[in-house]
Image 1: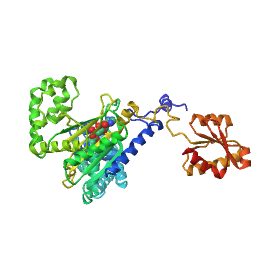
Image 2: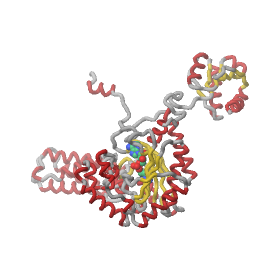
Image 3: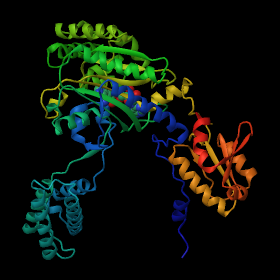
Image 4: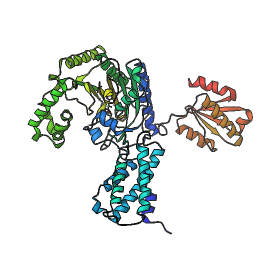
Amino acid sequence: MSESPTKARQKRRKFQAIRGTRDLLPNETALWNRVEQTAHAVFNVFGFGEIRLPIFEPNELFARAVGDDTDIVGKEMYRIADFLELVRNLFVGKTRYPSSDAEASLATEIKMLLQILVNEAHRALATQELDTSGENPSRIKELSDLLRYADEKWPAFSPVVDDPEWQEFVSKAGKAAEGIAIESLSLRPEATASVCRAYIEHNLQQLPQPVKLYYMGPMFRRERPQKGRYRQFYQIGAEVLGGSDAPAIDAEVIQMLMAFFNKINLAGTTLVINSIGHSADNCRRTYVETLRAALQAVKSKLGPDSQRRIDTNPLRVLDSKLESEQSIIETLPRISDHLCDDCRANYAAVKSELQLRGVIYKENWRLVRGLDYYMRTTFEITAQGLGSQNAVCGGGRYDGLVELLGGPPTKGIGFAIGEDRLILSLQEGGQAAGASADAPVAGRSAPLVYIAWMGERAYATAVRAATDLRNAGFGVELPPVAQKFVKALGQADKLGAKYALILGDNEVAEGSWTLKTLADGTQTKLPEPALIEHLRKSAG
Ligand code: HAM
């Protein structure tokens, strides 16, 4: 039988990375590794330890921490479409039809959905995707029993209109299905919420405080991709949890960040700071109300996004990049004029602590950040060469977040660097030495030694030599099949090798090796045991 045109087309399909995701090839990962190693080194000297976190968590964690009304949670989260949840919701929906509509086709559909639901629920129980400690097992058993009962009682397409037993069955099954507790999951859009969850889960408040943690890894947001904005992007972040909220901590976190940028030679950075007051005191709440009133007065001049935010989150209007709104925003009341005495003193202290550490900053009263958990200090760092997506790092203080997630009252401050943007900026600024697109063979480091071997006996010796040299820490390229010497030397040159180790029948018979320095063509004969010592000396 010939293949259908659709099948044939599918087979020819070339797969590509999903829009907004990317492959990082060795010519780039060299720089990524350098950046990450520098982060490990700098963060360690500031007393931070690494934490590795799961990539998915309950929706609820992010909704509560980052905020339901934020763009990140409201629009950009990758919710994992859970089949069990879909079937359950569909089933419950069908069971709510008025009974007089329960024609044979609907009855069949209900039974079919119940069958799928029961199968899927049993699978999820077995894998413990469903919580097995509560009422889930008994609800699922009830559904199985109901399904068996319905199969026996209404075996085929029997019309069930007005059958009271059918109605009772539907109502019971609907209720049992509704009662299954299903945890909806999302790919993480950020990691601060997860760090706080881990702090609570592992009782880290019992360790000496504060606990200083850092992380690196992929985050996921459903955004329209553009330069510096991806759907899977990478962050390097750090959080300080517990202990005091002394302004020196805010300043030290920022100092560490700037020390890191300095160490990797990130040019053209600007640190912008602000204080957005305290939500528990009245200063932030009063300011938000003052701002809302001022925004209402100019509502007709604002775009639809800002108009909506007057109700949902007026502070976010200050973030707007819309050209037509800029002059209006400049006339709005400023948080700095509304801080309470404590917050004002705290902000002044943070600034003087920064000065003490020689950290240069600018202030921007419009820096409010797009996540709900912040209070008091907020900051962002921009870098050059990034176009409109020029924020390479964002952070701030979030006292109270741990408590909001069910933990003890805990102070917190941290930041996350957008690693993709950081790398872009380094590349644009010419700081990506050794990692350019034309780096030898897609960026892998050039081998020190290329083994040019010919003949079967030479091959066994070549394999042994490669093993010994690699064990001694030298980079070796061993061609898998014999090559003519001219070709082998050409290949060694292309790969940027420093030496060619020539092994032909003569060398094997003599028990010595010919080591050719490719830059000047000089050759030395060496007995095998002397090779490693010789390379050590000459490679420095
Ligand atoms: P954020 O401002 O949402 O903060 O993200 C931090 C950084 O991640 C941004 O400045 C940007 O460099 C990068 N970033 C965000 N979205 C994307 C994207 N779609 N593509 C590429 N890069 C992106 C947070 O995530 C907070 N958790 C930071 C924090 C930690 N605050 C306290 N502790």
